[in-house]
Image 1: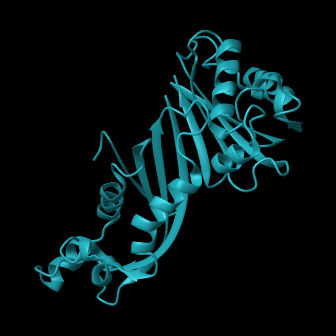
Image 2: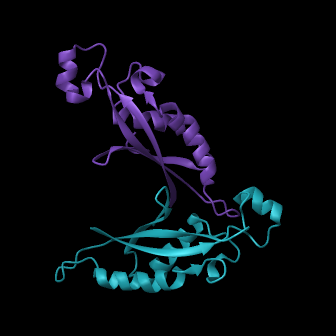
Image 3: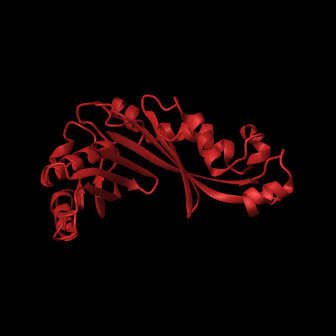
Amino acid sequence: MITLGRRYRFNAAHVLARLDWSPERNQAVYGKCANPAGHGHNYELHVTVCGEPDPETGMLLPAGKLDEIVVGRVVSQLHGKLLNRDVPAFEKEVPTAENISRFAWRALEGQVAPAKLWRVRLVETSNSAVECGEESR
Amino acid sequence: MQITRRMEFSASFRLWRADWDEARNREVFGPQAGRKEYGHNYSLEVTLRGEVDAQTGMVMDLKELKDLLEREVGQRFDHRNLNEDTPYFQNRAPTAENLARVVFDLLDEALPARLLKSIRLAPTEDLWVEVQR
């Protein structure tokens, strides 16, 4: 079994709060992350694909090709954005690290042929990361 | 129980297949293919999985593992040109995928049976390949 991983970076702002909850409840659940003015992170996105390297080229998927797909479908959608306001997927869904990693998984699943999406790891700070994979989706 | 040891080695290579013409090489490996050598400081993480020896308290002596990695990987690949100085890339390109498989097979052969669980080979901090049993 062989996998290829690649790291991407983007910066984004978010507010962890549900519009259908009171400020007090948001504060109780999300703490300082619910501050209405928002806050930002320097995110890392680690995308891992699996498959069988092409016997001729020796590559699972050229890294440049993977870059095009991930940057186009995920990084450019999130970079420099206020996620709650600027990204339709987070109009109703709170942009937690869990939900952002799921957003990336959905955007990439089935798009990395001939390889197959194996794992998405979203690093929000150097102390926290979320992984989304075949088994934990 | 799993233990992991990391090492680095530096190697140069050309992504170029001698049995293809120039146009095909450039199409597959990009416009810079074969024009010149380039290289990486590879980071290699080797993970073993096994039982902890009741007497020594170790899966494997890490010094012994370090020496084995130096012998099997360091001496073969460090400060070498993968195309010219090693026998493994005559008929396949030294991509990260192919190099990782060569390294996995060499270590699997050198270590006690089934002790090797996986390796992670990273040509740069932004790109890595993992091979698992």
